[in-house]
Image (cartoon, rainbow over all chains, first blue to last red; front, side):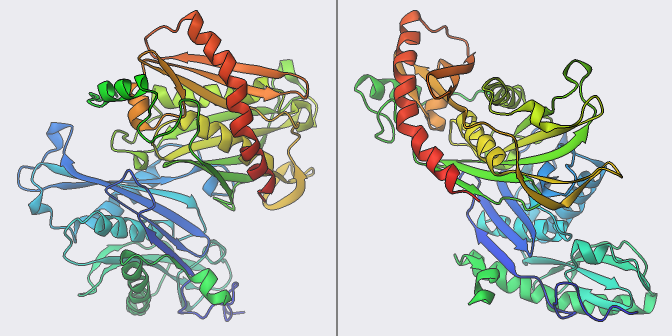
Length: 240
Length: 272
């Protein structure tokens, strides 16, 4: 049996309902919430500010210090609080995705702290985190060359699908599940973050990039509208 | 971390004239707003806002072997973090001593009040009991995070439901919740913290007031139907408090409880 119908009834190239909002944390210089279906992420930006410890300072540019933190109650079996190897890696790749569009030369010796928290996890948490973080950066007024948007493309059995859920990630029949999170820039569609976990034929990878381009465009639209002050909740919109 | 507080003098001068930065009275709380449903993966979760302060709390249940001296009683653990999103002054890393203090004071307030029926958490004596994990996170710190955490922890506990426990495999099925709430009494604990700034006492400080405080005293109160009980206390910061201060705390604690708690109780009862 092949994967013909998605478990939540979405089309193969359909995103989950998005929630997006900026300014959710008054103390932060910039903050945002981004949710894709049941995955909910929030992000806060503090800075640019003087960097401590001094040995991390770069005299010619600023740095982005990104933390990814999955809350203990965001997953079925309580996750141990505090950093793990996984969260450190995701923090790093998320920070890199953001740093590639920020004009860091403007901020020598400075740091921009970006903190991502996952409140509720149903796959695609790093993508939701990056989307929230990019919105928070823009909300903080940090100069960016382009916006970035992120989505997890998957190959479930032999189908390329957009924005996979945990249930799809755990699909074992046929060719199984492959998770391919992409982060693309808004104008030039450059890839600032790409990972893959699973198995995919070399000649099908390009298909996943094309799916990511279409999906990221939709994510970008929500990010932009939220940055203009809209409180986006597609769950409510679809009920109307 | 202490930052130099240029507002302290002004805060003290205002208080002498019976005024606060946001025009409240000394023993007046900001509006408390309680919501639930922060994470559908938690057995219960809540968000509490007190003014601009925001905390979220999630309750997770797991099973473990009981302690040998409490062979038929469940266990509870609490954790708290001033997460780096919550303010400029907080950095990522292991919980600071301040965060540890918050979690321990909240823990004692709940533990000692008799709010949780520990024996009701027993699955099989000597073998298996439920363990409650309460994880508290500050999302935005504008003062009085401890009281907010206490309200949120209690709210999350009250709406928590047991997940399904499969006796044969001895595994918890986290994605199937039962309709059974936790074994809790009506004796809801509520922590309030008094702060001393100069010669004045007040409750529910905002960030600037809290930074100006010389000392503080937390009381976790509960009402057993007959008497108002104190279940835990914690004196904080360096400056001592006097016997007269203690008199004032005693005098005002019940008044604050009566002014603030009914609103909280009403909101908790409306939670799903």
